[in-house]
Amino acid sequence: MRILVTGGAGFIGSHLIDRLLGEGHEVICLDNLYTGTRANIAAWQQHPLFHFMEHDVIEPIDIAVEQIYHLACPASPVHYQADPIKTVKTSFLGTLHLLELATKYKARFLLASTSEVYGDPLVHPQPEDYWGNVNCTGIRACYDEGKRVAETLTFDFHRQYKTDIRVARIFNTYGPRMLENDGRVVSNFISQALRGKDLTVYGDGSQTRSFCYVSDLVRGLIALMQSDCLLPVNLGNPGEYTILELAATVQELVGKPIGITFRPLPQDDPQRRRPDISRAQQLLNWQPTVPLREGLQKTIADFRQRLG
Ligand code: NAD
Ligand code: UDP
Image (cartoon, rainbow, N blue to C red; front, side, top):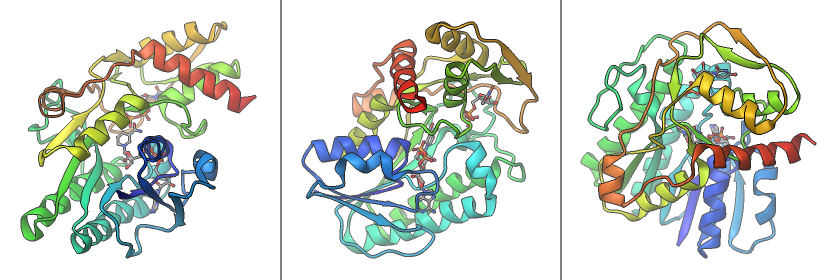
């Protein structure tokens, strides 16, 4: 198959490309290198079935492909809030352009959506039929509402033009190749711990998240792409931890005495998050297998190597 991966030089996209090329597909990686790096895809540069296109998805694109994984969008609050108007444009115009491409070439289109469509959820854990609790004027809205309208566009293309769509709602994912300065909690804690600095816990650390290791997530994305499922599907690890529990685990695994500094909780920071993955289990026969400690160990090893 000839497969387009937008955002392919980023964290999840580059792991997805590893899998797709490993399965013998031809892969076009499209990225504007905003948070992605050439280093993430360096191993494939000489591969005959790999192509890199430096392109911004807010501009239209025309290339014949059979499948599109649409991941292009900054995912870390620090990066998506740095230029929020660009984030909204990336979500809306980027998704519009890739859906137009999918429709033109009758390609199957998979949107990398997010658990952020549930906002600060009033239903716990979150099933796909929960409509969410999002502040549409807050500092996270450029991303949350951007992804919500991206889902809307995706379903409208299906209803209006019969575009072949898949929608993955990805919950917090971590693993090797996360940018050490991208501001997300796992990468922050690991970088801080390896440098012997205090871990920065926002708020009192009682808020929860569910952390999925990247290889599990990529397996889920591919299973969804290959399935007949036209409904949105949660992909994430249902193990739920407070941020203080995560801090304690990182402290223990890094094995150095490291303190904690408390910082103010950012505006609209969701208090809890855990996916209900019944749909993925039933329709994709998918569930995560990598426990948090094991995934963190692999991630710490990768960061140790990169930080030197
Ligand atoms: P990432 O920031 O590492 O990757 C995003 C990639 O998109 C980068 O390579 C970046 O350069 C590229 N990009 C950004 N804007 C672009 C634009 N306008 N044109 C072209 N390329 C652009 O983030 P990630 O964690 O790999 O996330 C990938 C996708 O998964 C995103 O769509 C994100 O919203 C979604 N997601 C990720 C998580 C997570 O926990 N990692 C959770 C939910 C959803
Ligand atoms: N967080 C933290 N310290 C950090 C970075 C993040 O305590 O150095 C918290 C953040 O406030 C949030 C959680 O960890 O409650 C997850 O943050 P992240 O930015 O990784 O993802 P998201 O909020 O988008 O789920």
